[in-house]
Length: 190
Image 1 (cartoon, rainbow, N blue to C red):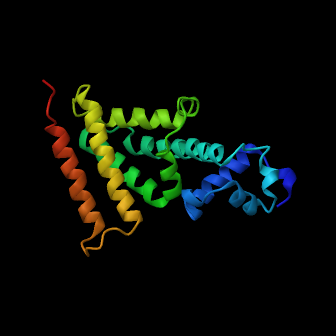
Image 2: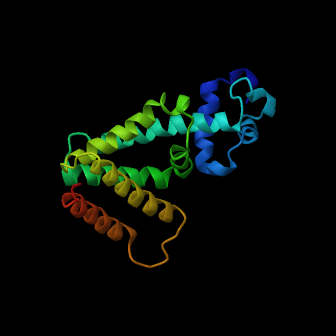
Image 3: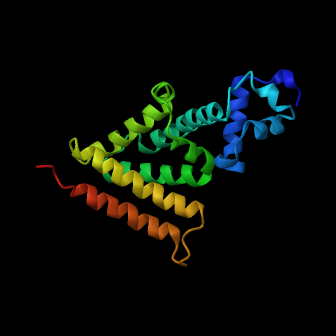
């Protein structure tokens, strides 16, 4: 592809797609340059470093992830919102493993605080669980509980980490129901 077509946005979009096909750990400026058929140096006008490239991927991925979650929980509350949120979470994490990994990167404050996608992910998490009537600081604990459960399942599924022949969707439905029951009876802080 000719060099003159490169823009920061095209470089970031390509890197975001490559994160899924190559894996986030193998995503480099050189890999993106190969994708465009240009020398590595051609990209440095659009991205300063591999770290900056990963930050761009994280911001784009968080926006896409938040869009999926927002559609899944719109107009829902309680069990319905949790089921929609959990399903969209799993689908995104499994379908876009590199992008999902990017959303979990520790970003510098100047990047994270200006990423509308990351902020929306946080807001959607809180909004989904508010329907359970859990107040702070317990609400943060509940969000950490749900997120770690969903993350663990999706990460194991992506890595083919479930060796048992039991159907994954059946296990998933049981886990989401167990989350609902637990959230319904969440212990209150004294």
